[in-house]
Amino acid sequence: MSACEHSKELILQDNLSFHVNFVSGAVEQSPRYTYKAYEYISPASCQKIITAMAAYKVLTPNYHFETKLKAIYQKSSIKTLILIGSGDPTLSFEELKKLFSTIKGKTISGPLIVDISAYQTPEWCPSWMESDKGTAYASPLSGLIVDKNYFHFSIITKNLGSKVIIEGIDHDMVENNLHVNGKHTKLDIYWKNNKIVFNGTVAPHQVLNKKISPYLSETILRHKLKQVLKQNNIIVKKEIIFTKDRKISETIGSESHLIQTHKSEPILTMLVPLLKQSDNLIADSLYLKIAHLLNLDCHHWQEGGEVIKYIMQQYYNISLNDAVITDGSGLSRHNRIQPIVLWSLLNKFIQYKDLLELLPESQEKDTTLERRLVSVSLKAKTGSMSSINGLAGCYLSRNRRPEVFFLMISNFIAPVGDIYKEQELLLQHVINQ
Image (cartoon, rainbow, N blue to C red; front, side, top):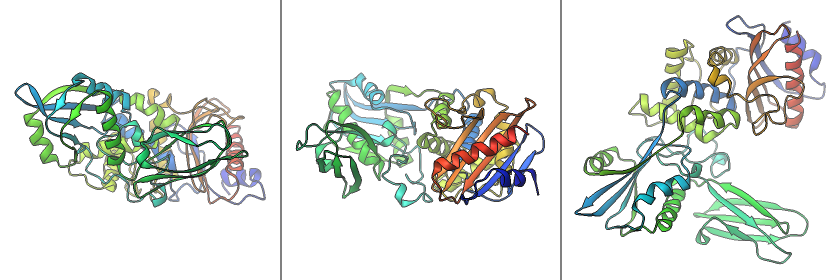
């Protein structure tokens, strides 16, 4: 019986039934404890560790996404306006509005062409669950992303019997069946025939800020672009055209003139919400950006996994040949990796001080560890899905040696709060050995 098997028997409550995978040990040494460390598991959002490591080496910490606005002129007027996306996951509506403000008040005699050819892959990872679509934690990935490709809206109520107001979405996109209820709020929000349906009841005197993703990015992008044009008093005589065709993009590019460029914050800054708040969109955008950078003919999400494996071998000397990687966020249930391999990657990860600083600390405010790990001090990336909950990070052992660990608890039916307690007890036991 290994040390971890012994600690499992000592600390797990009799009325809980779940599966444990665990590995820990001093940096650059053999593991001190292992328990089912060679099984293949779904890492959930702990996979973001791998995505961050790939972006750090291939895109580099100071890399910026660039969104460009170009024009084709006819004499002194603009014939065609071209917006070229780069897959920037942090581009906001206000930043896009500012990009267009340089041609405020202009009339465009032709179309606005939106170049979304930066990503040739489908907007949704095929191995994500159908129920992930149209949620507040997953949104479509395209060559242009604005406000994370979410519809942000507010549900506002006043007195009993008054009408429920929905702000932030065009009225023609809303089916409002909400009622003010004096007792509680119970909402059911979903897409139906290109409309967002609102069913349920809302308590009086409420302002509820919500978000929902569309099934296709063009739905939200067309909506946002119309707002940008209107607020900048720009008239486009013809339609807004979206294209993923690189040949069209190249032809247009050769005829156009640059008006303005928006640069994102550097990659290292993007890694903060990726690791501390577990931002799915940033993780998957970086995954696709890397995939398309190293494989110009990339058309499938899983091809990005092969690129990630190459990077881990090339830059970190860690083989992921037997792993399955289908996205950057860990949202796919198809991802598979051995705990011992992820532990080996963590050994490399913590050697980069600027990466290590981005891992959430126990009870750190505004992170996924804000209300967790009261009795142990460590830094770790969290990972959770239905009946899966993991931690990947590092701590100082009793003799003050830095140790790296990966802990996954899965197949549980107990409340997740109970699982948090079991994780904390196990880690407390190991750290104090």
